[in-house]
Length: 600
Image (tube, rainbow, N blue to C red; front, side, top):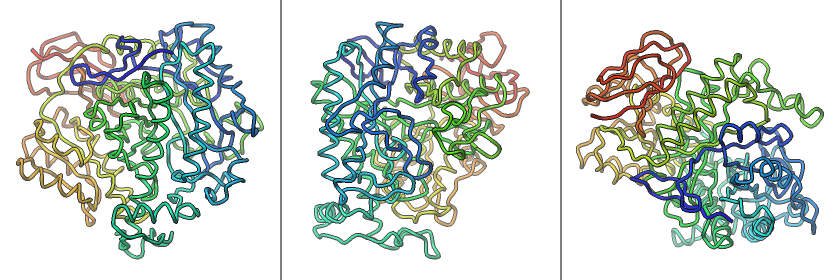
């Protein structure tokens, strides 16, 4: 098999395959029969995430009951079926023998297991009984099935083209609890929580009630036991993920990278029992090399706002790990899944009609191009790896869109070995994972963080997204900070104290004022002398040697730089390369202008 690692290159984590820094931009799909592998190969792509699932039971157990898989490797006890996965791998490698395959393994137990172990499962709304993510029996048996898959792939004739591994599980494969209740109602929760509480606090504890997580006149969590359970539920998922990653690492002699969806610190799922708020415990893990999330789905992914990261991307990179972002950008070609696999799905599942929100792509090819550009500019300036997630297949089946996707790959090729200083001054936008436990489910206050996350994208300045546990990074030259948790954790309070000690001004949400608005943040930064790149409420991206502006309002635009720089337009603006401190250009409504920028 190929060797792979994440290597620091001048402060930026880069993907290294067989000793060479490799462009970390990839492609994947759920619907293999509609895959665009050949189109992406023609566009120069060589990395492909290919799905393999332990079971065909739904990946969405809470809202829809959706599964994309036709074959589960272990659906029939005592037999293993890799046909769906291997057909996709064969298709890719026949067309491109030097392609690099990342198996994306869905770690979830088949029906025969859930029926055998009634104490290790919970009831879900749409998918029957599913494993409790911290069950010791699940950890034991899923690890064994996971290793069977890895060993099979290691011994296959395509093994020399395997470059790394992604471990998925839980609700929507993103390690959310399948019941969205933190496994609270499963029998296995009693002992697991009692043991954790005994280790942490010196006494065992009984389980809280689901009612304890509901607001009773106030959004504030008043039950200390419920607050502790919420923290346990997050850390328990993180522990499970680390155990599975360790197993894959050991099985591959620690010669290949392993990653996962996890750590949605700026997203709550509207509950403190989400499961994804324990990344602070994994950033120093030797078993996980990259973390993934989609672009945020705020406001139906409309134009004019930042489709922000849900991960604390700058904390992740500070710890030497890679952010590998899923860019599932809908286009005018995005169809309802019922039309693509007739008879397989309920009529109301992921409908693209009126009011279907994020499942509707832009109505035209040009607006679809603008959506791709917007997403790309964000991830390029953050230094994140990406994969295009052609979810139902055929989303990018347009010559203009594929030309853009090819051009974006070429830009990543140019940047993979470059070293760029991050621009200063910087503003820290703090994530406070354990603070979610201080709030009740279903409240405006628990949703406030993601609303502040959208607001901060409209201020006209880039922000670093970091965890409160990484507050020591404030000594690196930050000019200001924003804290978005309405009720901070102890770590959040310590981070604020760190700001005070360093003389760094900060703005914080509160229970009385839970959302930090763009207007408030803008005024706060201006008052404290922080340089603003745009003063018009547009989205600004800056980093890795590029600056970009996105807006849903067309017309004359102005980007003001803190010093004279050489700028070269990349897309979205037709102006000559120049040395300037003010970039003036005309932008079409909903488009993004990207410029290479060099200090002089």
